[in-house]
Figure 1 (cartoon, rainbow, N blue to C red):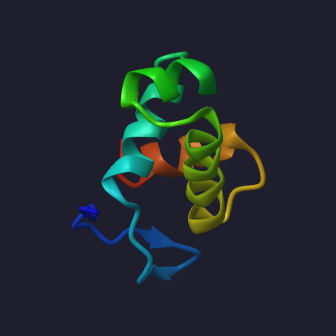
Figure 2 (cartoon, helix red, strand yellow):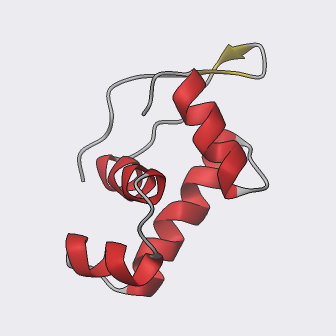
Amino acid sequence: MNQLLKRFYLHGEYSDTYLTQREVECLQLIVKGYHLAEIGTILEISNRTAGHHIENVKCKLGAEHLSKAVYIATQHGIL
């Protein structure tokens, strides 16, 4: 799977964690207002897989909530 070739600055230092292209795609669709079922259909993956991608994004960005993950991703140029 392709990786987004960009490290992001998080908690005072650059993170060695990268978001995958698919994680970024799911996050971009969330920002556009799509639900997991719609994301699954658009990306031709299951709803459960889409949910896993979103959970991975939240974990990698250190965000408890999706809105915080979107905020962090926007602040760091990921979105």
